[in-house]
Each structure stands twice: as structure tokens, then as C-alpha cells.
Length: 426
Image (cartoon, rainbow, N blue to C red; front, side, top):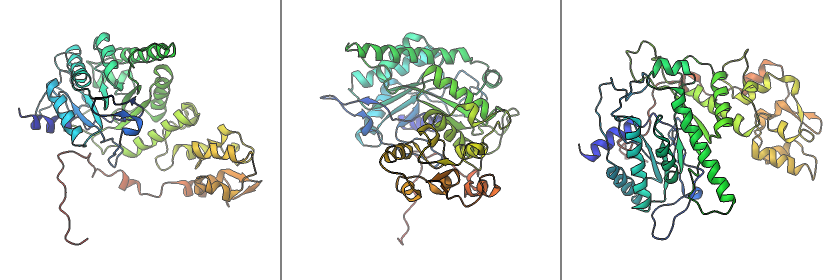
């Protein structure tokens, strides 16, 4: 098969994988090398639904031996199959990089023959890029669950980020939809990667010159909407993964129906708004000091689609508000809707010099159309209506129409997508 035909098949097959954030690497260029994976050298482009398109994102192969019901590349699906060779991936990466189309490589694969065989081919590919072609751009490699630990350890020496897809929120769902996979084969590589990162960090502290191991950390991907788990169980899972395996990110992927004939999977449009709210809640877990059981609880097991998670939490806890902006501690300021991390830091720093008023907050970047209901400045409340009023919830709700945001007329950008002709009138 011609390499461009392979590229068209295997780039399209990779579009359902969203774990492709390319930030966090500190791999710099070296004399005689090509590319730069340093933080300032990585560019990002995102499609409308948030998927990163800054990397050459391809599968090594879509010729899978597994038959996961939610996957377009499952063995029983009738579709064109293709596989690259390591040299073909290397040449594509170098050629795309030299033309300034990409800043790095995102490489995943279906399971060909067995996990070890597939993982060995992928590791050989990135090893060739690093050592033979001196490529120092960003590389994100997907680890194949069940692969030999020695192959995973070797991959960490050449890749900036490693990730193992956990796929589904529960072991029960995994057994139902992907009976050839098991949770243990996913969690063991995660633990191995975490251990490798920690060990290398300790060795660097002792001033030993050792190669970095997955310097941009590890991440995972979770499919949302294919199974009936609620948002609370998903956030608890994410919280546990962050705490136990020190993940950089958990990516949430709205389930895209890959078969209209499935009896066990939904055929509705991808739940993109739900995916968006989960990302917002995930942000609260990582940067705002929230716990999963604070964002949601047994009485409220799913995120409000029409309201961001922090505002929804604040409205369910009216006894905490309003907070006096000149007295509340930093952690509580972070919990005020409309105030982010940088703004909270500015508030704490500025009030050491003078008391802040409403206009000061606007200059510091606070989104006052949300924050005003939950704060007082010098004892004065600027919300205008009682916090327990339904009008507050209405005022905080998203202004866009849910049916428009949830429509099915969306697609991921493709390198083979035709460019529309320019109009004669500008």
C-alpha cells in the first residue's frame, strides 16, 4: 500500500484518541539535532471540540486483534486495514516537521499480533527518531496494556510523555465492552511509569547524570457516555488516578457512535457538553483544592449541564457565601465563581497594601458577572438579589442554547480535509 494511503487511513483512525496535550516537556535541542520539545517551542491548535491538532497524530496500525465494542478499529469491523513500518513513521515525522506542519509526534496503535510485538515496533520507531535522526521534538507514546515492562521502561527513555488508556470508568463496563482487556493490565503500566519518573527525579537530585524518564509525565483517556456510570463515579476515579499514579491529565472523550447496529451502546450524538463540564470539574480537582465528593455527592450525582461546576457547587452551599473579599483566606477565594488562580493570587497580594473594592476586582481579572453574587467588598454586597433566589441560577447559566451545542454536525479537523474556495468578495 502507498504510504499516503496508509497515512490517510491511520490518521483518520487516530482521531478518537484525545490524549495529545503537548505541554510540559523540557527536552531542548542539541548541536546538530533537529527540533525542540522545550515548553516554549511547542505550539497548540485545537479543533472546536477541544481536540489537539498540533502533533502528527497517527496510529502505527489499525489491524487489531481485540474486539472492543466501542472502538472503530475492532477486529470484526469491516474497514480498510493498514500498518506502518518504523522507517515510514520516521520519514513522515521528519518530513512534516521540516515543513513546519507539526511540532512533534503522537503515536498510538491497535494491538497487532500481541501487545509485545506492537510495543516493540513503536519503541523501535521513537528510538530511531531520537538516536539516528537526532529528533528532539515532542513525542507522546501510547503504551499498549499487557506489554512487557522492559519495553515500557525503554519507551520512557525516548518519549516525552507516556499514557495508558483506562478507557471505561468501571471494571464491570470493561468486561462488558472489552472482554479481552482487564484493569490489571492497565494499572500495572501506570504504576511502572510513575515509579520510573520518581526514581529518575531522585537520581537527578543526587547530581547523577541519567537520562530523563518521560519528563512530561503520564496521562490517560476515559470514554464518557458509552456506559451508564454517573459523573460522580468518574470524578472519584480521576481523583484516585491523580493521587495514586501522579497523572498529569485525565482526558475525557465523549463517546462517538461507531456502529448504528450496536444493541449495548448508545446511538445518540456525542455528549460534548458533558465532556466539557467534566473537564471543568477536573480543573477544580487539580488546581482549586476541591474533592470529588464536594463537587458532587450521592444526592447530586451528575454535573449540571447548564451551569459550570464551581457555580453549581456555590449555589448548593449558600451558607458559605457571601465572602468578604478583604478577609477570606486564599483557599476560600479560589472557591468563588468567577475568580481563578491568578486572580486569587493578585487579590491576596494587593490587600496587604490596601482594602479592595468592587472596581479593584475588575482590574485584577475577576469575572464579576458571576463573582458579584458571592462576595462583599468592604462589607457591601453588589449582587442585587438574594443568593438563594432562582434568578441567580438563571443569571449564571450558560447563554448558549443546549440543543445547538449538542448537535451532531461536528467533525474533527483532518489533514486531508479540502480547503473551501475563497469568495470573490472580501
